[in-house]
Image 1 (cartoon, rainbow, N blue to C red):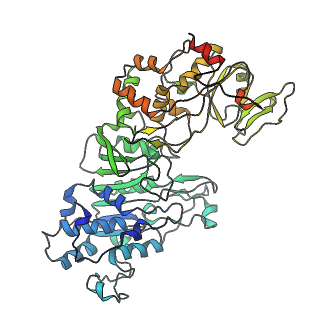
Image 2 (cartoon, helix red, strand yellow):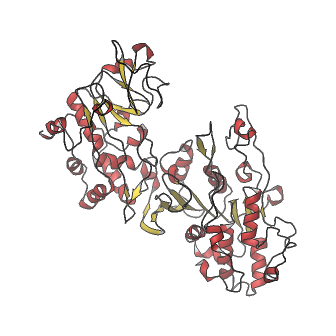
Image 3 (cartoon, rainbow, N blue to C red):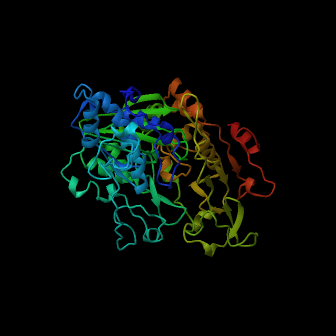
Length: 553
């Protein structure tokens, strides 16, 4: 049911107010009305004809979900209650509820839904809306802000949301949200049963410092589901599909919950929230208490669904594969039952836990006994006694991968993700190590295998499989779980790999169009990459002496 069919006799809302409402604190992302309506569209039509249903927005900011639901209910309940005034009073008094995340949000939401921030109507002086205002017994009406405090445990963090005590004390993290802290619904509402819970919860809170955050939206989703309503409809970042700090249990729960009926993925940055850069995109889902089956997964670009398929999410091997076409490709690869190159990766900070991205070595000058240290700005030098572990690997051939690549994933006109996925693989001979800026993707047994492995990681086939487990710019070894561990005694091309795993023409075309070309840095005659030395240059996959040699096989 379209919200645009609302009776013209109703006072006009000004959509620009909510469309252009600026983003406030980092965790407060306001939902544009068009997006709110797109979400409401995936609810069954029957909800708009149920006068006994109770609706809750557990993280009310602008009141947009309640406002748009009200418009639709005014149409859907017309047959049940023909009198507009009585119908309006019933909807606002008995059906719509909101838990605001701040006092300001409560005021904004009440103005959006009730046309006044004072729900008693006492402050209304505009005769044009006096008759429209539904008078409540309290200023809050059914949209209230419940003051809540963090409960700091022995570990110095809130026992509920994990906000650090220092941030709470310093007022840098001021919000203890009522819904996830259990203070809303209030005691007066403890016997109330909600049928539809819909909203856009806060996404994150500050963690161990001003530059690190951790997700919080999963707490709202889990509590909403635990309340056992008929429907839960929420929008969150899509990072939970494949990763996210502390989201492993949440992802496992969602993927294995057969009541998850629909997921609408919006991978394009700024598509849903023009004022918020949410890497990896966002998605909204419909949880249906009575659903028991596969999930309809859709991809939405620029407001249009470009792909949709019904899938068993449990077949994603621990992640939600967001690309519907990729799902069949992954299944074909895994059906071959190869081991994974995930096991070839060394742990992050493979040589010393203090050699992080800003570490440059003990010296910038080479000398006897010093070992080249590859970092993101060039070459430093360390001594053997500086190692904490794996010093024996200094003498091994290595393939390195940058820890991060671009997180600003682009899409083509059809909504297909187009990305390089990984940074440039670097093949180096024995004699060097690296900082946290690089993963040691493996230690091949000889020069030939090292060269072949670097080229293997640069294939579109491999990077496409990595993409299905990667939602941000950072990589970890588990992102490579779908990549088969093949022999590196030969050079693998994309054509070889497509043939080996039985991909059809449509699947091949999808990979080719989704993944950009990737160069390879072959520094097999030096313990350090040529590109890291003064005046050095990279060997491209299509040129350079080393590559020409490999191409002659």
